[in-house]
Amino acid sequence: MAVLTATRTTGGGARGTKRRKATRVPPVVLAFVLVPLLAEGFWVFWPALQGFYLSLTKWDGVSTPQFVGLGNYREMLHDSVFRTAALDTVLWLALFGGLSAVLGLGAALLLQQERRGVGFYRAALFLPVVFSLTATALVWQAMYQPDGLINHTLSGIGLGSLTHPWLADQDTALYAVIVPALWRQIGYVMVLYLAGLKGIDPMLYEAAKVDGASRWQQFRHITLPQLSSVNAVVLSVIIIDSLRSFDVVWALTRGGPYHSSELLSTYMYSTAFQSLRLGYGSALAVVIFVLAFGVIASYLVRAFKEAD
Amino acid sequence: MTVTHAAVPATDRTPAAEPADRPRHRPGRRRALGTAAFHTGAGLLSLIWLIPIAVVLVTSTRSFDDIAAHGLGGLPHSFTLDGFRQAWVDGGQQRALINSMLVSIPTVLLSLLLASMAAFALSRYDVPLRRVLLLVMLSGNLLPPQILLIPVSKLSEQLGFYDSLYALIGVQVGFGVGFYVFVLHGFMRAIPPEIQQAAVIDGASPWQIYHRIILPLARPALAALTALSFTWIFNDLLWAITVLRTDSKMPITASLIGLQGQYVSMWNVIAAGSVIAAAPTVIVFLRFQRHFVAGLNLGAVK
Image 1 (spheres, rainbow over the protein chains, first blue to last red):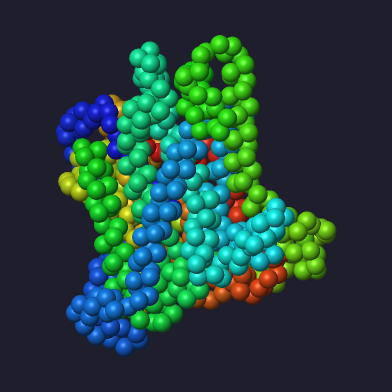
Image 2: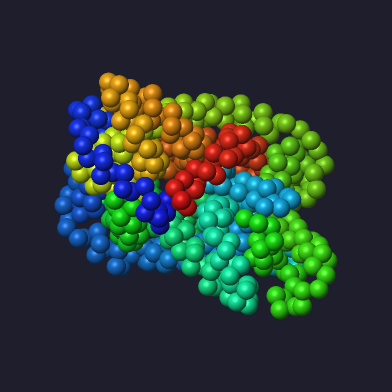
């Protein structure tokens, strides 16, 4: 799960830095930065550079990598599994991302007021956030079984014709995997929005009511604009999380049946570590990186402004 | 936030909420209706959210024969802790839970130590290129892990770390540290410079300032990040299956997948395994709920 922070809107406190200019930087302080930076360089930046290089090679992991230029990327154009995985990833972004944002905001609006019982409801919605995606997947796998609670309930209320091997059917597998992911993500988005809603000045609503604004107008013209910085955070979180989604699909379907629930992340993993096509797997990883790049860059730009 | 105005958006989404343009007679009755509608809506929603958890808890205490006879979705006719015993002993969950702890606890401590040092230096001193360094570190955490998987597994192979918990700790620290630096930096910058200047005049070394002044003041942020990062690291699957191979070294998430393959359709065992795997993070959440939620929002709205 990615967690990002919003850029600060108020400029208060930023002035303090000028005074610090006078402070000399002792060598030990430089070491304080360099040690963590080296750790990250070793485990992240250096491997990332290798990843980009490997995407231009053909490699089985044993012999020396063989440079093939853009051959892996050309292969993708004719790879039908890649097309399915890319399409599913876009669908995942739209459905998982869109629904978790909308439903998370809805839950936050419903549960924003401090009143009796609200703590329990918030905790109930938030509880799945602390489960691992693997455990979440197994919980839902039990629900989806042919004799599981979902089919059992459908038969019980006279909708027996809808009972279904949800995870085994190519037409429903992807959606059946999105549901557990949503179940876990909505509580998280809700918490972000709850904090955002808390930060809105109540006077704005008072003023709007005096002017005779309807609830919808208040929501449209006060709540939504006031939440813009939270929206930006939620959007970044959702896109990064969507592209990273792996565990829940891997634990439920391994991308099957017949690649019907394949995401780029699962296809990349199975290509690399099961088919041992490390070059092609790296190229798939680069595609994921390119898709995430816009979000990463725009987030960094905002963070750069905040860091003054 | 006052109660009167906040009721407006709160009841907005409940199905039975009254239209806004209705004349405002009898506010007491209106409020009672709103409250009832709120509890119905929120209660139903919570129920939907809790049902899968309840199903797993119940399934984990049923016997295999009961599930076979009455179906997974049927009402329970038995109570036994046999599933837990099988998952814990035969399924290797005990070993896996120990592995998870052996990875999670050092990773959390090491990441936060390194991150707080870097954040201290970048926020309290005029380190050259400090903004660039901060963002470079943050950008590492934003990368999709997929780009790192193959090189990291090969790198740990070359170093002889492959299939050892050290590799897992190393990569988790390296990948997570950038985010923690960014969050702690934001928090430490808010500490007034005068406190530090007073210590400098008294002849305190940077280490003393870090250790005695800044770290204690950053405790709320550190507590929040501890709760949060423990959950992330404990719940990780991808890095574990990338750098580990031997079953007996796998942490609990990966071992759950093994359990799923080993005990196909023995749902009491699989459910018990899921309960065991989820229990530590649920305990952390319940015990440190406020820190946890604060962690998710750290710096989000100031």
